[in-house]
Length: 104
Image (tube, rainbow, N blue to C red; front, side, top):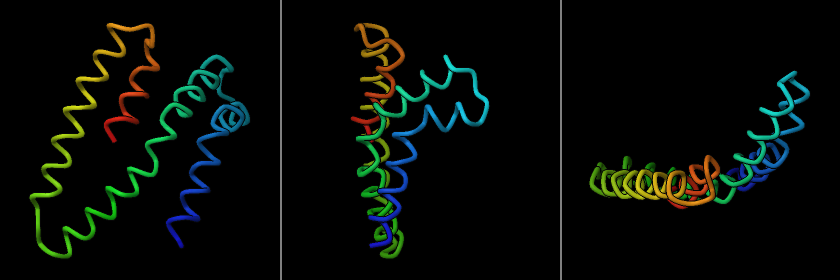
């Protein structure tokens, strides 16, 4: 229940990144770019929560292997896909956000 509430709050904040940054006095071009970037990363939020649950369970059972495997695989996917999307496609810098979402 608590994680659902925090997920909703985090989703609302991420969705409203641009107006929040503009209200804090950030330059409009930067705020708009950060808002687009954040929205592309929004689909990864549930997977971050799932990772945290897996991490807590593994720590409670004194098992390190699932966390190591999960971290290695997600980093490989993130780096490889990020490089490809940023440098070899039209995604440009937004490709890094998409890769982060997929590699989460």
